[in-house]
Amino acid sequence: MAKEKETYEGMLVFKATTSHTFNDATRYTSWRDNKPPYAVRIPDGRAAIKAGAFYEDDDLGAVIMHDSVRMIGKMAFYDCDKLTKVALSASLRVIGASAFEDCDELVEIRIPDSVTVIESKAFCCCEGLRSITLSASLRAIGESAFEDCSELTSIRIPDSVVMIGAKAFSGCDNLKEIHIKNADLLKGQDLEEDVRIIQD
Image (cartoon, rainbow, N blue to C red):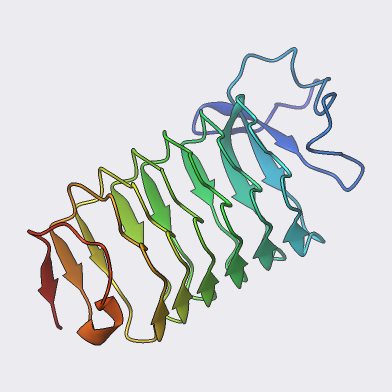
């Protein structure tokens, strides 16, 4: 009897292995016979997702990371047009620059409490992003990290944050509330005029 194929959110799941060259033009050629979008599972033993790993992968719909993953490299998921679901590793420490930049279909992201750094432009131009839950251990939010997330209406900055880079929330046209204990961190930020800063 054939083994039933794993699915996630209705998408066929494929296991990424160390032999895959993700940003090679021939990546996943054996997977292309299946109707996209597909989901990919990052298995145990992978400490990092390399820079540009899934760069402009128009067939990627979801990512499920094993808890061994501690870092997402620069532009790892840049401009993945169909990416809608991301299950981040519970051991993740760093989300690299432009890691999810221009992923327009991403609606929600939950940053696990292990993450301490979100680098520049990590979620820039994620125009569909409406809900962001930040790590309780987060220390730094990079420049333009959430710039042009035009559907975002509210965000809570954890008390652990000590640095917010320039233009972190620039172009967030619908942002109405920022909950933050230390409002001084927002000085010089390019915010919309009607944004309420709630110190709680």
